[in-house]
Length: 143
Image (cartoon, rainbow, N blue to C red; front, side):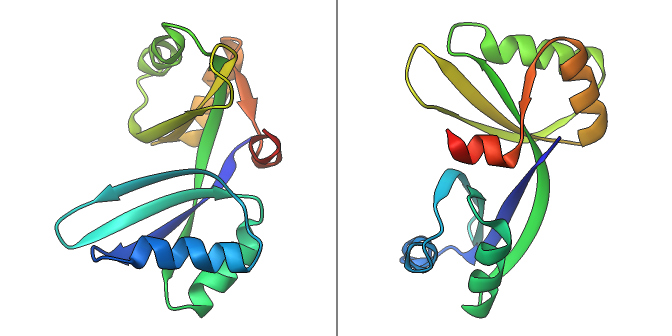
């Protein structure tokens, strides 16, 4: 079970991020999680939204370069060592974490770790085997 994430490539200039978020808001698309990475010339905005297909369509119609990526959302207890325990499983499987980001709904409850692995299916199998909760896109959006 993976989550579809939208990746938007954008020029590294003032106002582009605001333009993307305004476009999504105008079309009633809710952003549930995001990450921004940048270089000197461009950035990559990674989004988990409540309607992937609609978001992809409206962003493309507004001139943005958009891709869809499979990521894994892992729910862990919001306490010291939550991330370390997930990474221990990943290390034992000799998998590579290409990138990750996280969010917490309420401090002291659960955190959601969003990963892009070099082998998504193998990562899911290993994490489930070790007792981790893998969330679907609908479950992430319901948080």
